[in-house]
Image 1 (tube, one colour):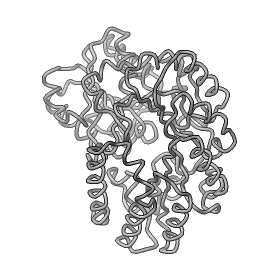
Image 2 (cartoon, helix red, strand yellow):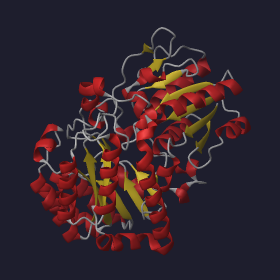
Image 3 (cartoon, helix red, strand yellow):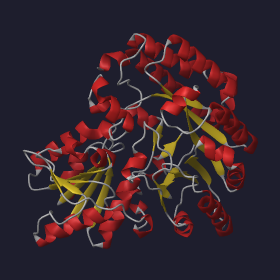
Image 4 (cartoon, helix red, strand yellow):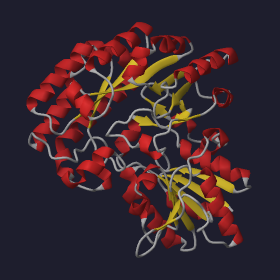
Length: 452
C-alpha cells in the first residue's frame, strides 16, 4: 500500500524560524511500515506546505497525520480537504493530542485515531485494511462515530527497545533545515519516554501511566552511529534522571569515538545531586541543557509539584557554568502575577546571571492536572491558543498590561552584554536574523490580546 505521512504546518510559522525539529514520530512510523513492504513518503508541511499537490502526485491509499493541541483544527481541515479530493482515502490521526484528548478528533473525515505509541498500531490497521477486517480487534485506537467515539482496548505502552530505528531517509530532502538556535543542522534522538516528576502542568508522565521508559544505552549508541548531523537533540521528556543509565551511555559514546554536540532536557535537582554526571557528559560534547526553572517562588514551585527549590536553582546555574555547559533557562509566567511579581521575577533572573533565558505563559494543556482541576476557568478553548504564549486563565493585571510586562521580561531579563557571547554562536548573519525575529516576537506580544 502507499502511505503518506504528513507533519502539519505550524499554527504560527514564526515558531519555525526559532526552532524546527525533525518529525521523529513519523520517521518511526515510516520505518515500521517499510518493514511490512509498504511504499512510504513523508511530507513536512512546515517546509513544503502544499500537501494537496503532494497527495495528488503520490495518490496514497492511507494518510497519517500527527500533531499537538495547537494542530487540532489544522488536522481537521487537512482531513476535510483530502477527503474532498479522494473520499476513499483512509485518514489516521495520532500524536500527543490524539493520545490525551482523542474525542477532539471525533470527525467524519477521520477514519481512526491512534492512542499512544503508533508504530505497531498503524501496522495492524493496515493489515486489517488489506484483509478487509474491522479495526475492533486492534488495541489502542478510537473510531469516530456520529454519536460517540468507539474505543478499543487500551494498548500497553510499547517497549522502546522493540521499536525500529527511525527512518531518516524519509526526511533526506529536509534534513539541512532542522535546527534549534545555533545547533544546525540538528538530528533528534529519543533515549527515553516519560518522567519521574509529577508536575501539575505536564502531561508527559501521565501518557506513560507514570512509568519512565528507557532504551538500552547500547541501542542508543548504535543509532547515533547512523546519524550524520554534528548536533544531536535528545528529545526525551527528561534525559538524565536515570543516572546509572546515562553514565553508561556516556562511556559507550566515548568508547565508540562518536564526536557530536548534544542538547538535552535536565532537571535542577538532577544537576545539583549529580554534578559528576554532567561533568562526564561535558567531556563528550554536552553543550546545552534545557532547564525548567519555572518560578522564583518556593511556594509556587511546591504548588506546581515541581520538586525543586530556589536554592537548588542557584546551585544548578553555578554547576553548569563551571562546566562550560550553556543553561537554556526556562521560566513560566503565572497569569496571576501582579506587577510586583513581574518585577521580582525580573530581578531574580538577573541575579541568576543567565546567558540565555526564555519565558512562556503557564498553560493548562489537555491531559495535565492543571487543566483537569481548573478547566472551568479557561478563557478560550481555541486549540490555536495553546501555544505556551497566550494566557488561557484570567490575568490579575489587565491583559494588555500583562503582555507589556511579559515583553519586558524578554527585553531586560538577560542584559545585552551578557547575551553577546551567546549571540556570537549564531555567526554574524545568524545574529542579525535572530534580532529581526526577536523584534517580530515583541510586536506579536503587543497584539496578542486581540486573539481571543
